[in-house]
Length: 387
Ligand code: NZQ
Ligand code: ZN
Image (tube, rainbow, N blue to C red; front, side, top):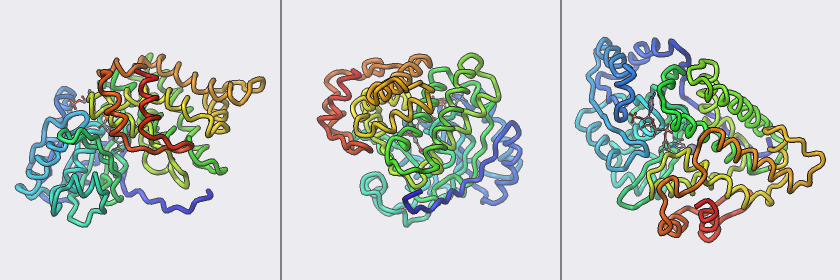
């Protein structure tokens, strides 16, 4: 653990079939007015909306409704939510849904009392939040992002054509999150596998960078092994509780800071996908699946030992008779095959990208990387490889 670190994650997790039973007790710590934030229709179809409204009503709360938060939540929705929070003097924002709903709730929580333009301050200039932050809590229904246990908030500014990610300080983390794996049973297969690839990508963004002998890399490998194992079971039987609960916890662990401890990190696959998303509104994990293979083929020689280790430890490839180059590529190939096995797309055109978008996406992506820095021209090459 070569690099000094501070680890602090203040989110309380209630996990399991009966996790919702803790909601009433938690609500006692907050004031009367609760904003109920959710997406289009999933929680109503599941009956979860009625359950939550009943618990809130019995707890004597006044509900401020914030429906219709879109996948890839927009800045316009953040501003609308912030206005509602101020007008109703909201005491707690309860996000019920996937990463988009929770990310939007966090954005609303920092934007409501921001003095100035929140986008400019928080998503462009990355200023620390000095204004009042409204507490957020979550009930998770779709697994992948780990937004339930982190301070990340990814918002699409439609006017600027930027999908911007920001990680706030831990006071923006949800105060508590309720995780019942059974809530994820109704997630459509495409969303399920997109969420699973998002988890894999979070792990790989942290793994493929920095090569001291550290415990964190072993933890990442272990989570990847569990995730691949449980994914194969969930693909056959989406209501296998053990598999869905493992996947849910893998997701939370993959981006609650524990798998980043002491590590340099990459995050360029995410940077590229966010701009693909800004132009196409594609599903986040599907975009990551498309971009990952050409990206890793482009950079692997700069971190070859780690890619060989990935082939051996994650995909159990016998590398004894292979050169390092062959072994590294065999690992990337195993990843590519798993993407196909899950039924995820492999081409940008399948996500609605048109050729005229490629240069614009490349130029608007924040350059960076782990083993190798990539600039707009490199990103354009990577995008053309998977177009
Ligand atoms: O709108 P509703 O009706 O709720 O439907 C949603 C949505 O269409 C549906 N869904 C959710 N739970 C369901 C369900 N359908 C049936 N049954 C259920 N139980 O699933 C769809 C996708 O939901 P969404 O919240 O968009 O998915 P996800 O959790 O993957 O979140 C994606 C967003 O999170 C950002 C992404 O960029 C994207 O904007 N990220 C957030 C991160 C963070 N906070 O740290 C990190 C990630 O890298 C990521 O960038
Ligand atoms: Zn992600």
